[in-house]
Length: 142
Image: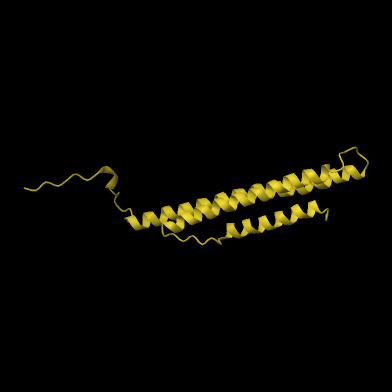
């Protein structure tokens, strides 16, 4: 008489449920990781966008106050604008590095998430816009 080993509770599949293979479970886990990385980069992009837009706004408001004769430090508009624009550029840089490192880790486990996905493209554009804004404020181009 042969005895069967009992089936573990976690291995029981409800009737009518599709069978999930180990390969498809791994693929889905990797896809969730890629999408989580995309969402994280989008959060960095939103943060950078807020900092960059606020930097330009503060720069122009302080510049307007200075032109109306309000006593401000002569470099206050430029300093405030440069600080916030620099923070926005730094945010995009850090977000991009984090995204690249995650992508690199996924490549090591034979998952190719395509670095140039939509969030990566938007992140790159935001970085370039931030650099342009930073140098525009630094040279008083605006």
